[in-house]
Image (cartoon, rainbow, N blue to C red; front, side):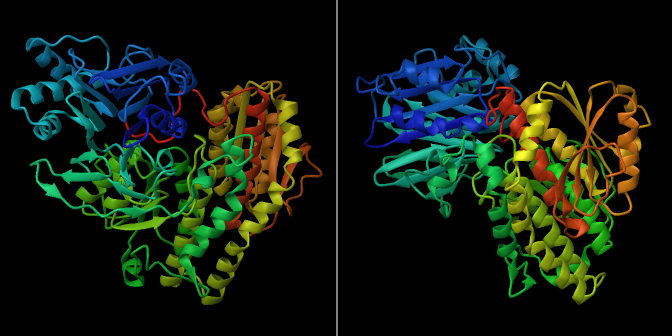
Length: 610
């Protein structure tokens, strides 16, 4: 949530900051601002409510703000309404210090009261102004900038990625993080700071992922790291392998549509990362066959679409590996006191920075459990703290509504399920090979679906005025339904719900009225007839019914006229195909309604606060 950038170098800072902020727009925001150390020795701060374009227009694309060192921010309101006053950067009373901050300072009221008693006044409603003035207080007290940052970290509770500039130190940025992402890049006499890689990828592929409670001092072409005792520490940089074009639209109307069409590649890349010579190899994950054999059960935690991927995994791992599996919302698991029995805890997160998922993983460690992270971002917090890591190969995902990262997570789950089944000998060698062979065919089948998208586009145009949409299914079809419903509500703003089809009669059917759209997912052998029966029950009450169905599902004798077919595959892998029409339906319907598909209202790409 929010986005921070920083720059020191030979270029004018403001245009670089604006370009970086633009590449972080997907994180969600309601206001933006920059602070630049100008040649006259002052700090110039420019802020604006609304889209980044407003700030760009105010500053002539950054050209009107002179200086070679600065920080920028896109804000997603947590404390105080969206306004120019509450936008970052914030400064002290003398305007000699400016700071940007991503995260939430939980004890900011207590700190604010202490600062007021020491003569400070406040112009905003934000916790970030408190953070800025707390750094100012300790700098004035000790005359040591590093110590001011260190004292700040010792006094605040919460999450933060904080970057600070000082009027009397024109070529330096100080930064620190705790539970909120921060990367630093150094190249050719320049230094960059950002919340995520796309902001600086045009300038360098070599980045440092700042550790928790690590202080960084950025200067022209250099960065020095310190611990809270202000002792220098060493850091190893990471090479970013995907190119800058991967984070660009490349001629597509929206990032979401581009990313939907990238799914065949990311599925194949994720499979190929763990399959060598026809065998699943988890050497890079760190999981040996011996470790897999010791697993007594699995707990899967995630948020949003990552949780939905976990629901699919629950069905598949239990069925193939015959292990007890429980899937939980990370925001609930982190506050529970679960009974544990040596389970492997799988934490799923695209960004690897999701606050609730990170906290859930730490809770698992407290209980003595081993953790496996399924993440998409190299060097992210969850990846660094997990015992084992499976990196999905989705590349940068810019649209807030996830598509390709979700598909890559599903594939990671399938691979784990097959590997567990083979190690535990719950499937034969022949069956294991057949499953893997079928899994390797999924990318081509997704391509086939994407090549026939006109049918779903036409249906979206016919149903764009619906105010209520329901998705139903059983087994993994239910898991696909909850993801399809989330995609629709995220970007179309239409009220949408998903239910296990068998639950319709237990209250939900009272919501069905004439014109309600009900989508059924029909891929699970032995369950299809029951779901069709549930769909027809809604039709008899005036609903318009539609279905995503496997090629071998017969609906000719039913009342379902709108059927979107998916190619045949093993029943365990149908979620990877069934979700595609639902992603496309949500996308086309949202476009037809005139919504900002890539940046839906009130949402952020990476939820790094509770």
